[in-house]
Length: 296
Image (tube, rainbow, N blue to C red; front, side, top):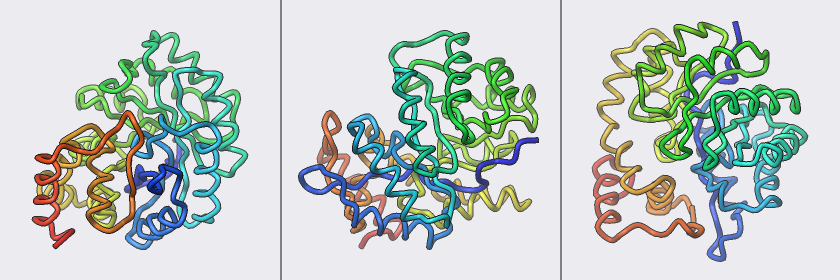
C-alpha cells in the first residue's frame, strides 16, 4: 500500500503577476497564507492553473523554490514538472527536488501524442532521475494523450509512482484504474465537479481550481467523504457546482484568475496567449461570485 502524498484538497494555485507580468511574490505570500489558514491540505505550484507554460525556466524554478521556502513545511508542496520534452521535464523535476518539494506532478507529454509505450518509458525516466513521489497527470482534453488503466497498472509497480491526478472525465476509466491498481496507486480527482464520483472510486481527494476561491469549502467537501459522510460531500458538491463550472466558462486559468482579482486577491494579469475574458463572461462570473457571497 502506498501512502498518499496528501489526502483532502490540494489547491492548483495561480501564479500572481505584477502589471508587467513579473511574478508578484508579495501577493503569492498572501495567497499561500489564505490557503493554509482555510484548511488546504497541499499546494500544487506552477501547474496548469499556475500558468507554467508561459513561465521561462528561471521563473518556473524560482516560483517553486519560493513556494517551498514560504510554506516552510506547513503543508506538502507539489511542483508541476511535466513537459512535451522528457529531458527538459526531468531537468525541471531535479531542480524541484533540490528545492525541497514534497512531490512532483508530471503531466503527460503534450502535443507529441506519444503511445502508451512511450508514456511508460517517459514516467520510468522521471522515476529513475528523481527521488520524490510522482503524481502522474492525465488530462487528455489539453494534452491529446490519455493514460490508459493498463498503463497505470504497469507504472504502479514503480515504488515512487504515488498516484494519478485523473482529469479524463471518464468515471468508468477511474473505476478501472482502481480495480487494476488497488492500493498501489492513489487517485485524485482533477475535475472539481467530479469530486464525489472520483472519491466513490477510492479517490483520496482533489487537486482543485475551485480551492483558489473556496479553500475551506473544497477541503471540507473532500474530508467529508474521507471521514465517512459521502452524502455531505455530494450535497456540498451540488451546492458549489455552479461556481465550479463558472470557473471554466473560458479556458483555465482565465476565469479563476479573474475571480481572484474580483475578490481582492491581487492575481494580476494573464500572460499571452491567455487573455482577459469577454465582457459577457466577466459579468456572468461576477454574478456567480455575488450569488456565493464571495464579493458584494
